[in-house]
Length: 72
Image (cartoon, rainbow, N blue to C red; front, side, top):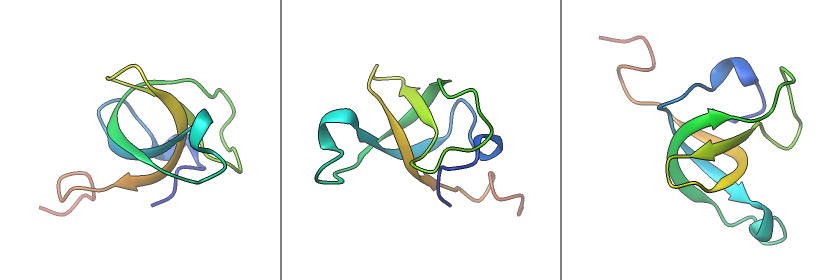
């Protein structure tokens, strides 16, 4: 799942983000969402978040675990 819709992102999710300094290369960093920084419901480059590590970037991919997908 991509990270353009704010409604799909919440604290505690495992995500891949692109840090500001990695925008040219597209290199992603994986981590757990601590805070959602984008207020709008949609952003074409991904919703901006802060990870528990303190890193800030735009969500490129959300890793969905079985409990997150709604399947038991």
